[in-house]
Image (cartoon, rainbow, N blue to C red):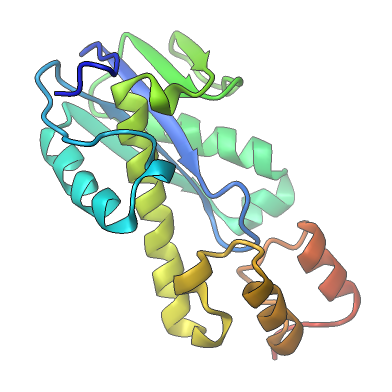
Length: 201
């Protein structure tokens, strides 16, 4: 167990992945960890290699008292906005837990308006609270899995490499091949290309 991270077996940690990319769903995970968890190297998913995240994701699912992953898709992101869609994904992840936590710790500075349980926003919580760190890993690996599936359908866009972020390679592919239905239409680079009629045919 990493004693540097806070853990309360009655509390759930929640985090999201995929707010910034130009394509695909935004994901959230909720995790309740036991006091005696054994997850070597557990920390914020962004500080881990993809291999380490994948290894830890398996262990988290095996050891967690309860865990849940949820998403809000591109249609919801377009209908509402990315922030609201993210909050919906977080609320869904908590609702998906088969054990109701006494309290929910949410990474960041916002609490979903439809959260019915006691909740606290924790800035940089993925570096402070074990359950949030675990949630960040499950959300990130779920989001990456979607990108690998998309890459198999549209290998010319390079989703397996850039995971949907607005890299130079992704923007060049958008310019060359056009916008896919899975792209987030209201995100500026995509919106600009749509205005030019750059649809994927």
